[in-house]
Structure formats: C-alpha cells, structure tokens
Amino acid sequence: MPVNSRIPGLRELSVQDRRAKVTEHSAADPGAFEPRDGLGLDQADQMIENAVGVFGVPLGVATNLTLNGRDYLVPMAIEEPSVVAAASNAARMARGLGGLRAATTGPVMISQVQLVDVPNPEDARFAILEAEEEIIAHANEQDPVLVTLGGGARSLEVRAVPTASGTHLVVHLIVDVRDAMGANAVNTMAEALAPRLAELSGGRSLLRILSNKADRRLVRVRGEFDAALLGGSRVVDDIVLAGAFAAADPYRAATHNKGIMNGISAVVLATGNDTRAVEAGCHSHAVKDGRYTALSRFEKNAAGNLVGTLEVPLAVGLVGGATRAHPTAQAAIALLGVGSALELGEVIAAVGLVQNLAACRALAAEGIQRGHMALHARTLAASAGAVGAEVSEVAARMVAAGRIRGEYAREALAELRGSSD
Image (cartoon, rainbow, N blue to C red):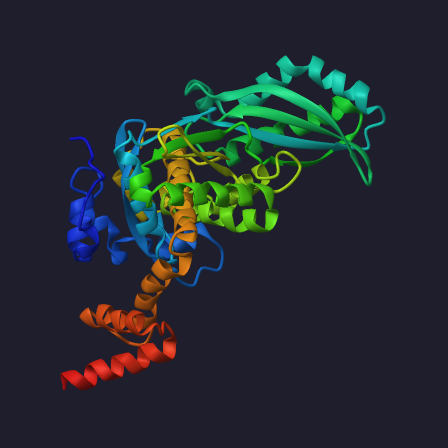
C-alpha cells in the first residue's frame, strides 16, 4: 500500500500511537523502536572500543514529504527542538505544488593514493595513465562481489600537487560503490594498488584512503513552495533576500548551512550512516568555487511562489557499517522504504532543503526564537522535573510569561503542584 506522509495531528498522539501510525504502511516493526529493543551493550561493545554504555538520541518522524511523486515518512535522530516539526511544515508547503524533485549523479567515490619522492612527476603521471587498464583490473580483483553487482573501479586520474614539501603525485581511483557508502571498498583497492603505483612513479606511496569530498556523488533537489502558505509575497521576497545574504557572506553562510545539516545529519544518523563524512563532504562543497558560501539558493518564480534548490554530495549507503549492525537503524530504513542508496541520498537532500527553508522562513517572518523557544520550554520543563501532562502545562506557563528559563520552569512546576494539592 502506498505511503501517505500527510498525517495531521501526529504530535497529539501518544508515543505508542505515533509508532503504530507511522509504521502502518511500512515494513518497520513498531516494537523495533522501543529503547530496550534498540542497540544493546553487547552490540555496542562490538562496534567501538572501550564501550561503557549507549547514548540515546530522540528519534522522530518527519511527515508531509513528497519527493519524485512518492510520499515518505522520514526518521530523524536529533536532540534539537523544532527541527522535525519545521521540516514537516515546510514539506507541507510544497505538497500542493507537486512536492520536491531530486536527481543524483550516481554512487561514485574517489580513493586517493599519495606518491612522494617522485623524481619526474610529469613523466610518472603519463606512465600511470598508460597502465590504467592494468590498474583498474587489479582494483576490481579486490571486490568481485561489487563488480557482479554492477559496480567497481571505473577510471583513473593523476594529479601533480605542489606542496610545501615539494610536488606530490596523487592518484584518484574512481569507483562505483553501488548501495554501499564505499569507504571499505575504495580503501581496500587503494591499499592493493599502492605498490604498483609506487613502482610506476619511481617514488613511494604514503597515504592510501578515500576522499570525503564526494563531488562525484552529488544530489540535486528542488522544490516550489506555496507563497500563501509561507505567509505571502513579502515573506517570499524576504526569504530570497535572506538567501542572497547567505550566498554572499561566509559568516551567515555557516549558520545557513548548519540549518541544512540539521535536516541532513538527523536522517544520516537515524539510518546508521556516517554523519562526520557527510558533513565534511557538504562543507567542502560549500567552498567549491574558492570561498565558503550557501549550499542552497532561493528564487521567486513567475507565479509568485518560492523556488528552492540544493546541491550536496551525499556518501550514504544501505549496506555495511552501523546501517546493518544497528537494529534501530534497520527499523528506520524499513520505515523509510527506500530501495537504493541513491534514493536514500535523494530523501536526505530533500529533508535538508525543507529544513533550510523552514529556518529561513522563521528568520524572515516571526524570528527564529518564537517557535524554537516554545519547544525549548518543554525541554526545560522536563529538566525541572515535570512529568506527563505537567510538561505541557509548565511549558505553556513559561511561554505565556515570556520567561523561558530553567529557574522559572522550577518555579512554575512548584506553583502547579501547589495548586493541585
């Protein structure tokens, strides 16, 4: 049965009812999201060194996302208030106009081999390129399963890189990694090729590792957002101005891009992928033209609606690593229902765009703090000791008083409990 990501009133349901609702039309088991059924100590001990426990992060579900004609319920693991709600709300503003569209350049990663002490770098570069067929064949011998799945090493690039320690020769092996993130595959290939590359260059190999600047694995997403739902023509114009500010000024761009990563990293983490690799790739892409700038762009179209676009490198996978080892990540992927790493990357980029749009809208309209602090009040209420229905009541009192601070949360809780005695 097709997924319908439009679920009004989801936030009013209990946690158990929310689970039942969002897993109704997916392969995910609602019980898989119980904390006691998630990552256990034995599993944690196999995943990292010196494990002493498991650190919990809230897992929510963003709704309303329509992408490439299909609806998705999107798992997001994040501790920051307002992110899941904001992404859901912004996605709703594109639904009536057909939702978002995304495309990708393919699951291609780069493995680097650094060659040093090369006596004649240009001659060595030509010698390596002449041996490309041999080198590609040797690389593919390292992962025959990947080759049978339609992936494998595709081509070579060789660059002479001037450094403070002389000219280094850097060999790029271009690899189609299919549904994997690809780090293990390309690193294994680099290790295997290094001796032959050193021989061909007359130097010695040093570093042999993938690049997290995954600019052969780009995802491009765009969407049209309803001007009326955004708040009118003035809000659209002001979002365009806010986007222009971020594109021109690196100080603003850093915070603008952080808003994008709020959405991207939350889905990457929920699906067991490598947040640090994705963040490194995205921020490096923000300086692809020589200066740090915004990853997204906003424009006003002839209909008066806002058009948003985003291009980011996304090295994510559905096989290997925590994606397969972490039971909650498996449940999150089942809930999402994606069939390939490419599709997963497109969903992640779409969430990055809608989250960015939501933040820019809040900044251009009522200001970021109103909604954010209202949700933060709930966190403060719980920290003060409020439980159950007390959390909403204490948070409401804090918002009404305009005093969203820890000491007032404790005071409001004491007053609430005193009045109920």
